[in-house]
Amino acid sequence: MFEQKAISIGGMPYDKSAIIYFDQKITPKACILYFHGGGLLYGHKDDLPEGHLRLLTQAGYRIISFDYPLAPAAKLPLILDDVRSSIHHFLDHPEAYGADSLPYFLWGRSAGAYLCLIAAAYGHFKKAPAGILSYYGYGFLCDHWFQTPSRYYQSLPPVDASCLSYLSSGLETSGDLTTHYSIYVYARQTGKWFSLLYEGREKFFYLDYTLRTCDALPCPLFAAHAINDTDVPFDEFRELVSRYQPKTFIAACDVHDFDREEDNPFTGKLLESTLSFLDSHC
Image 1 (cartoon, one colour):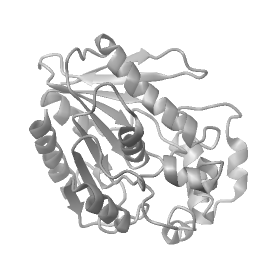
Image 2 (tube, one colour):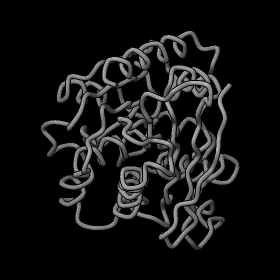
Image 3 (tube, one colour):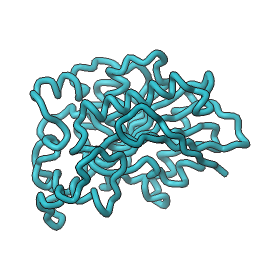
Image 4 (cartoon, helix red, strand yellow):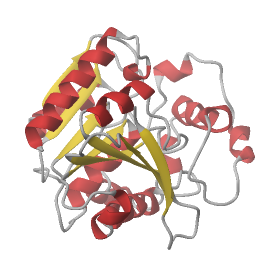
């Protein structure tokens, strides 16, 4: 059975911490640095289903789940700086994570996968990751979808801008579904998601915060996506595959984060494919 412990990471103007998941009875063979999803507007570092944690820790993987500051209080430059800082902290202080001499992978779901991809593409780490796990991630490779209203979210009850007034005035590194999910729905219904994430010239967004100028990643990639994903278009996945030739997993369903349902038939198959990828690149 896996155990967990939390560690604090100092030197930030906001509370920052990580959770380490491990099986004490099993010698670790690699670490997985995990970043949660939530459209960069909500979510928290302890969102991994128990089945994922149990299977991966029993297979010898030590999972380290990090938080990061959320938009709209934090914009993309700060969020990516924080993610890179987390990776650097892991590499500079492996003893704090029980990770001496172990290879590491980056793993993200949805927005967390986006952060992993951008960090790996432009991060310049002293030790490259052994691989990246992208669960329904993206690199803003296709036009329009992130700047225009989402047909799926427009089918939900409307949310107005008053939801933003309930946010804390300071930086937050955790956003619960009950308090922050409505902000994401509002952002996708109105097409204002992009403006909540980024301020500045659009030219530099495409240069620095998308994969459009990245010809190759520094390590192998595993990419999973649902054919009828409600949040990230399948075309975004196709473009990712075309550019980087990853190992792929495609789920024939219409749920974005389909693996949150442990009884979903695709979840077990996804985890099997994930383990195969990890074991082949350790």
